Image (cartoon, rainbow, N blue to C red; front, side):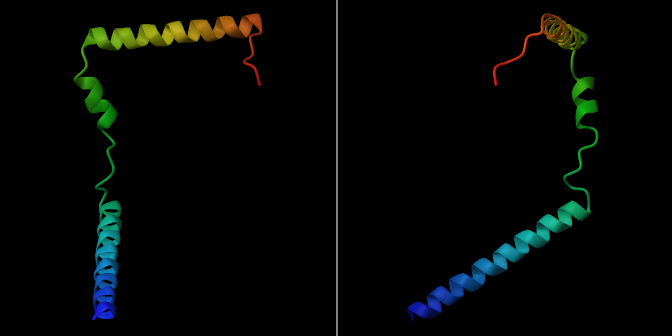
Length: 77
């Protein structure tokens, strides 16, 4: 009886795994995981102030990196 239970559990687990794989492949084929508009939708709900803050932070980061390049700063190996 123990061998029968193990065989049934093994068969059911293989069947469920195969169903999961088929579901994943179906989702990939039909574009379920494609989110081409995620970035565009995210920015449409941001306020203008938040976008300006992000731009100013990027400019500060670029300025700091440029200063480090001018001084010859290199991180330790």
